[in-house]
Length: 501
Image (tube, rainbow, N blue to C red):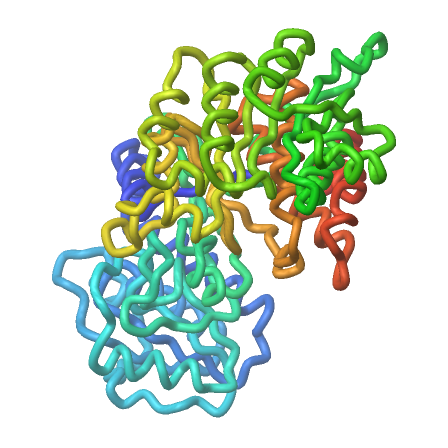
């Protein structure tokens, strides 16, 4: 499955590359797009009482004119409503010229009692708020009981950010071309697209060579080749050793969730590092997870010098303050292990973030993963606001570059970003994960996969996907304690058959 995500500008580049190569001219690409939409409509809604097509003045409207022509030729009842005429000499003008359907002004569009409404007003290129008769028509369409189909993306959505510009068409189905756009996956756009169908309109995959897309949908295709596979002659330490730091005696559960998740991810050994006051509380709940006292930097140095640890988790219920900062900096400066910083350790650097960023900026592969939710992200990256940077993808990328770290920017549309510009948008999140402790499990999964040799970006992407898949598998009523075992089963299914998901 193709998982590249193209911005509107990159999609325009793909169109132009196809035209310059002489494979198709712009008008034939428009014909192919209109044909793809019309085929879908006739296949799935061929018995509709009427098709109500809303056309704008640009290429999206041109696609709509083609759809109207094909539906009319098939004998369907077609009503065509237009918002402005296409500019002379454009592909859209040519499509309008060849469309035999009577044109009606969109200002006269009334709520259709039945049938299908097709949105071909603006598409992905919109860069200003929808207003006037177009906005009124969109609101009217949204209040209709008709099935609603959008061409490319629902009109009123910013194709790059997924944000609503004034008002937006609420689609039941969106038919886009060649590759998905960010607006199909980012909220609130995702809620307005309905089912997203990617249609082939004759653009060859080799155009991506020049575009070099850096944004992807987070599917197993992105990282399955890096999943750790058990060798016949392996042993527990060859499978990676993870160490997780516990909080004090009354804050031990979060670390145990991370530790258990690391173990279920396939790590061969997991040690919980706890202050003396928390040893008894942790010991009462641990069996396969090892336990080791760690009060201060000296204890930590002794442990890291005598144990070969591949990845650490620091933050879950650890406590905010100087100790969290000292341990974090020690892990970055005195070990070569992968490190996952979550929760309290992120907040601990709110006022001393340059110290953290500088410590993470050493040579070699990226080995720090930060896992902020929205509040933690704003505390650590206060300049990266929705106002200054409306795209969540771009905010995550900027944060990753600042921190010299992989950033898992958590939320309903979790973004995983790397300092090198790569970003993945996760699409299998679920409200089921809005439960205490689920983030601790994610941190442990990430560290466990890193400990087994996955690069930090791929490990983070895989952990986020597996986390979501485990929640879907468990269903309503899940609690965080259920997730590690379910995640292990998901990994097993992925190793047996990566195309399962």
